[in-house]
Image (cartoon, rainbow, N blue to C red):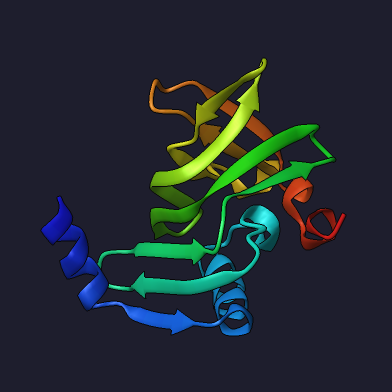
Length: 144
């Protein structure tokens, strides 16, 4: 899969530097209709987006743990987060874990099935899904 990823990266728009990457990641979240505060990464050094395949990656200097106070959950973001994005959905997510009953659970998909419900869902590779209010992932929560 290494050469496949390399090819996806070669055809991508690539941005570098924290300010530009943060701004472009927010624009991307707006484009795919997901909350801007969903990926509260810091010290982003590179972001890439292949519009043809939907492949996106964000690299930060180090792992980051973030507490979403509105839902009482801690999420860990690896130094590199990747996903395939489309409207209301991030598939094949890598680099994102959430603490569930004292263990870290991998998140493999993030989606909004019904925008009118006001909920966003997170699934792990085993298919277990948890839903939370979209408002819990607003930028205001990110700044706490």
